[in-house]
Length: 211
Length: 211
Image (cartoon, rainbow over the protein chains, first blue to last red):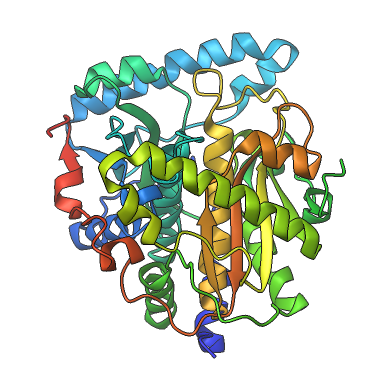
């Protein structure tokens, strides 16, 4: 009885299906009113104990963007070294669009405010709340025709230092947002032959783990 | 140019705004085809390195549901004790709908498969991926007219043991899903006077942290 009309439901399933982790951007600034709308969508996320542990740092300084790109490039090399035999294959992948995207944001897990509600046994639920906010941002961006990529290839301590993030806070995502020529028809890592996704049926159990 | 039509965008912003963390359910089973659709939406979430670290355990055994409720009730008492002066106020809140909801799922963070991509410096990105899947599930549920609540008030080791989850796996959410009489017009913890949310403007910075 509380269901949305079919046309609205279809739009919601569409955006969930068509959202992609984008690394290729075609340039062009994100209009201010669009940025405001998608950030407001992020801010409407659920949060454990209503702690709202997300913070967003908007990067408008080109010099700072360059430094962030250098951090990512540094970690890309280190990740490749840690990959072992797939290092060359990894280095061929495009894993970020930091310099080309229209808008660059850093999502930060705020210093712990001591919330116990829903966190006594699992303090990491604050990270889960930040991830929900980022997923909202992703879906809203896709609806607006904007690509978004979540880059987690960086040293969080180095980025925290660069942005003046206080003790206990942690940057968890460099978010590249902007116009794209086209959205990947499937996850890029799948298209590039890096990894094949598993079907839902393998990940769903009844009453007891079976894997 | 890749933007969705206005009516579709409005539906997506609507569901983001109207999603609530529900604790009050009115009973009634979730139809199988609806459950399939919302789980498929969850499964379309992004994941770091395409690792798809989410697993879902559907609870169909009433005996098991009762045991899960007992776990939550036990942790509710412990949380209240840890709350200090707000313990009585906390105990008056309804923090779960485990017995009343139409469908009960447990979302599990799978044992680490060793994915390095996007995780060398931040291994916890697998939890972020599971949270994105849960947010998809939440939005799809709302569109279908179903309430969903993410309960994180439980001992994860005890729940892992109850469900036979192998070493390294961790249940991170008890998800109560089902029909509701009405959706809260605002977050329940806000309506109950537990905590007031902060506006986005306080959580958004430019180039450098300011708080």
